[in-house]
Length: 165
Image (cartoon, rainbow, N blue to C red; front, side, top):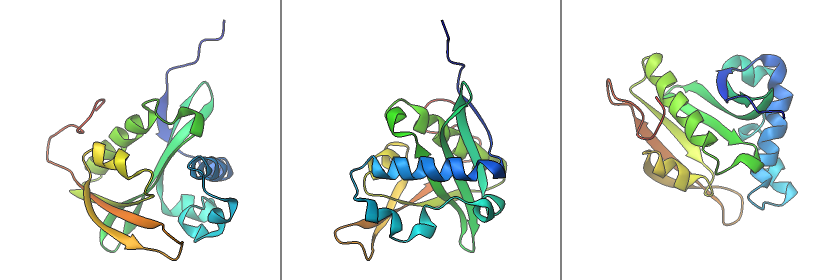
């Protein structure tokens, strides 16, 4: 019997960019978008070597398989959670929460007092459940599809709102 290993979170490696890029596409398509959606502002979902060099990227893996990942980038306005994606067959299994908790702790570790994120409408309920505060809805060029902007304040010496710290 092959028992899967417990999930671990580690820093991503630049050579994993294509794996993460394909995982992102699968995760986006999970929500029923047409394939042309992947070509709408592709820079917002693309993971490539230049992105990996720019971002702080962590992967969650178990038994050698990358199940999900997140990425922080520094913007002029501060720290931004630029990506958080899970393999579609694992959505709803708690791995997103594990990545979120790790991201909160990582942001705190590097001295941030808050971070922002832009969310797909389908993921907005997840971020709200994690304690992120809705800021505004931003109109896009894709018909009937708007980004949801959130902010998450990092209280000093507090653990993440949910679960594992």
